[in-house]
Image 1 (cartoon, one colour):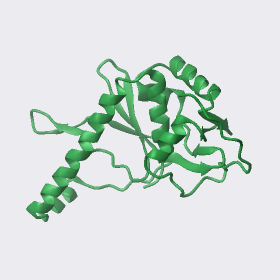
Image 2 (image 1 turned 90 degrees about the vertical axis):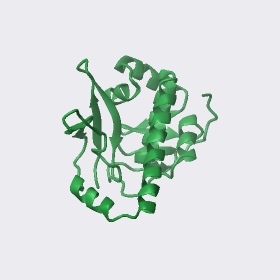
Image 3 (image 1 turned 60 degrees about the horizontal axis):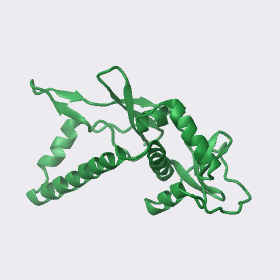
Length: 206
């Protein structure tokens, strides 16, 4: 309902992967499985990144709702769930074939859709991922992320203001945000303010 949650996948080698930064409207706890004893096992962990408000939906509540649905409604729901899962498979299948820079561009565009607000310079991210967050999300190291982010700043793709990232006008990342879902225009923390004056947009190379 409110806040940001880090959804983590523990790895067998002791490391972890940051699957996503979840925010208002996202559903947590769906990624589980049945073991050989018929017990539900959680695949992911969830850790709050900011102060959060969560709405709890129990498995029994969902089960009761499903029992009241007609066969046609159940079929439509199944089709939508299949479509959603297929989108995730396609996303990660595409993701693994990209370079580190392309992965970060893809992640930053997604963050722009979820946490971005319109700004005279582009899209201002109201939540700043850490270097460790980005490294886990693209399956790389912090030094690699640091070099790529420096390159993106040098190329005019992203900027910085008051410890916040801005996806700059004229850049490929800002264009990816515009091509996706609309930018949020809800509450903006008073400490994060858009720039009063714009700057000339620059055509940038990918």
